Length: 218
Image (tube, rainbow, N blue to C red; front, side, top):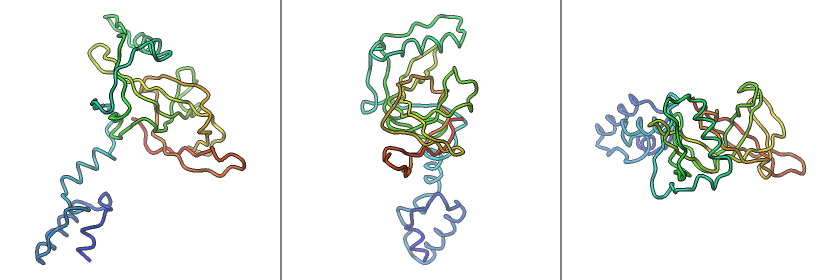
């Protein structure tokens, strides 16, 4: 039984004290602890859970490399320059910021509140013209992220395809995945939730899906 437990894969459900106890009992019986599963290493497992699943106090970070990053011309993306300028005005900077002609474009490597984000992820967001954040849940699909260094600090902007809302039940939004009404560019602070999509049966509309919030961005 101990050997079977040591090769299982539900590591996130097992406490570190239990992992150590099982490891010691295996060694006492002359059995070699598994090199996978929840006995891999208590410290490594804790670090992995922290990187992938634990809340990060709203921190936003990104890792740029040759696989997930390209350089784009700012004017190639409609409304990108205007969106950045609006955000800069809201910051009330002492030194004016000049939006560069070229910016970093990321398709992965972004981490918000401890969770990884990438192109294709669904999310809930709001726009400044909404009366309140909770007034209307807007659903969008991440196309890419853009980085601009403003006043010595990197700011992330996200380009989304907004989806048409069909229905809403509690925090679950039912939306059409095939008909984005418009493309939006927002500062990352306007994104509120990472969302999982699940199939939803709707007569004559196989393209309808449910959006279920996984975690918040703060």
